Length: 451
Image (cartoon, rainbow, N blue to C red; front, side, top):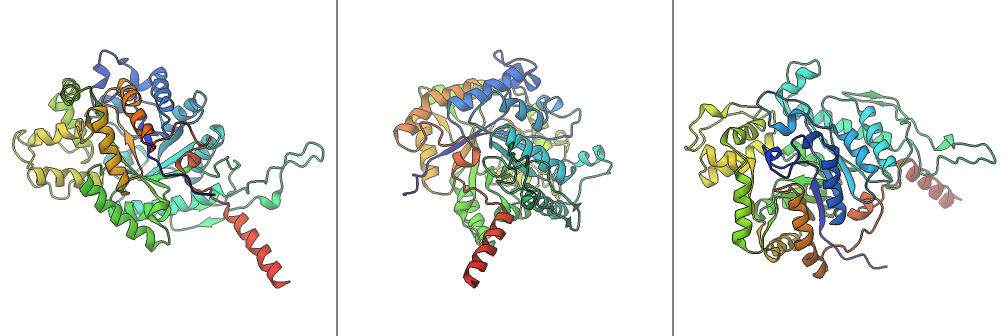
C-alpha cells in the first residue's frame, strides 16, 4: 500500500489570551487565564480547523515582574485532562519539567492523560530554566545548564521505560476465567542510575497510541542532542528560512549519529499569522495588537528569558550593550537567539522588547499570501508544520480557519478530516512497539531458526 501524501501539520498554543496584556482586550474575559470556558473556545477552534494538537506551555515560578498570564493559571495535567472530556480528536501536549519532579510521577500523569483521552497525550519535556524555581523546591538556585540536561536524559529514559511496563495485551480481563491480567507481560524497570533509582512497574496500561508523543523545545547544543536521540517532535523558534535551514541541517546530522532519520522527528516552528482582506488590513490588525502593549510590559517579557534581568537600567532607544553570560543557565538558546537578532538588525532595546512581546513575523497578509508562505517553507522540507500563536484569541484562530485552511485544503496539502483518533496517528508517526514485546518476538524467531 502506498504511503499517504505528506501534509502540513498544525498545532496551536493553548493560551486564553495573547500578548502580555491581552486580558485587557474588550473581547477577552479579564480572568481568561483561569477561565475554563475560554480554554474550551481555543480547543474547539483547534478541532474546527482540524489541528493536530494543543500545545500547553508552562512555568512554575513567578515574581512581581511576571506578566499577568503567568501569575495565576492552570497547571498542565489538570487543564488538559479537563479538555480531554470536551474534545474528540485534537492532541493534548503538556509541558512537564525534568528538573524538579520525579520521573515515576510524570510517567503516571502522562500515561493517565493518554489513556483518559484515548491516545491523544503529548509531553513537552523541558528542563527548568528560571533561576528562582530552585527556591520553590528546596534549593537555592537552578542546576547548571549541562547538568540539567544530564538529568533530563536519564529522566526521559526512566519515563520511557516505565511506559513499557505493560505489553499491549497484558490486561486480559476475562470474566469467564477470572483472569484479569497476564503477569508474564508485566515488567519491572529496576532502574539505578546517576540521578534516579526507580523500581516500577507503572500502574497504568498502554493507550491506543502506545505511549505519549515526546516533544522537545530546547535549542541549545544539549537540547538539540537530546531531541535527536529521543524526541518525536520539536517545537522550534526558527520560522525564517535561513535559521530553519540551519536547524534542519544540524538536526539531520545529530539524528543520523543516533541511528535515526530526520524524518523520524517532526519540526514545528512557532508563527503568529495575521490575516486580512488586504496587506494593509493585516498590518492594521497587527498595529492594533500593539495598542495593548506598553514598554514596561514588553521589558517584562524580555527579562523572563534572561533570569528576570533588569533591562530598565539601559537606555530604551540605544542598541543593547554586551550582556556577558546573562541567561547562560536560563533560557540559553532563546536568549542567545534574541541577542543575535538584536545584533544582526542593530535593534534598540525598545525595538527588541516589542519584537519579543508581540512578534510580527513573516505570516501577515492576505489569505493567499499567508498560505503561500506556509506552503513554501513547508515544501522546502525543513519544517513539517507550524505551532500557531493567535494575535487575538480566539478570533485570530477563527480567521485562520475560515480564510487560510480552505486554501491549503484546495491545494491538497492539508487534511479535510482527521485520519486517526490518536495524536500519533494524526501526526503520521509509527506506533512504538513495546520493548519487551520486541524481545519476546526476537526470542521466538531465534528459537524457530534454531529448530
